[in-house]
Amino acid sequence: MLIAEELLLLIHDDEKGNVNVWVDSLEFRLAEMLLLELEHLQMVWLTKSHVSPTGQVVKKGCVVGKKSEPLTHQELDLALDTTLAQALKPVQLVPALSIGLYSRLLLGLVEQGIVRREDKRLSTCWPIIDRGSKAATRARLQAVLLNGAAPTFADTALLAIAQDSGLVRSLVQKNQRKQAKARAKEVALKNWITEATKKALKAERDRNDDGGGDGLLDILSAIRKHAEPHQGRYKELSRAANKENLKRTRQQ
Image (tube, rainbow, N blue to C red; front, side):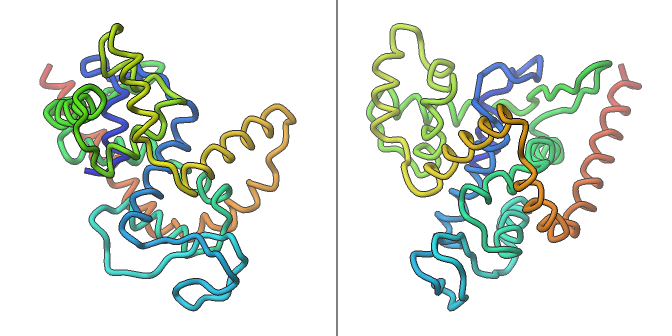
């Protein structure tokens, strides 16, 4: 399971299927998790000179990647394709990766039989069917936060957003929060990706305050075409989820 998928399960209510844990700029955070996973797999790098590790001539400080056979998840493939499409600064790449990511990840979880899609009059909810995956992630993080267990890479990535979310509060009892927050700060992953996400969040807030954003839109439109081969898959997942939802409604 992707780290981004684990994050989605952690912040959704099991029965109601709505987001019940606050996360600052969720779409950006999901993109951050994807990029962290690609970096962990050694599929992307931050260039420190004008020549990337793969021999590509690029601007210093841009993110580059290497082509590969299909990865373990289609969202990793799409994120890598986006990275390869244009050498962007990390602060630009995070918003680019976030486009449509929330919905695609949830539809992927529907396909895996982990969540169910429920279309209501004014919103769509995603109740969790298979709660074992979420329970396992919660137990793993609680062991790190409260029992001093050694964190996995996924744990350190998830706890990287601890300061900008209600994640830790949702995992422990009220009288355990001080201990858990201190431990989260100690083990949380810190690297060029987490720093870039913070900068992207600040830039997004500044753009919203100023009513700007045209520069970012130009960047995103330039790379959208590279995601087109994946859009058919997105539509396929959406149709499958709608069909399953209609089937369940008729059975009721």
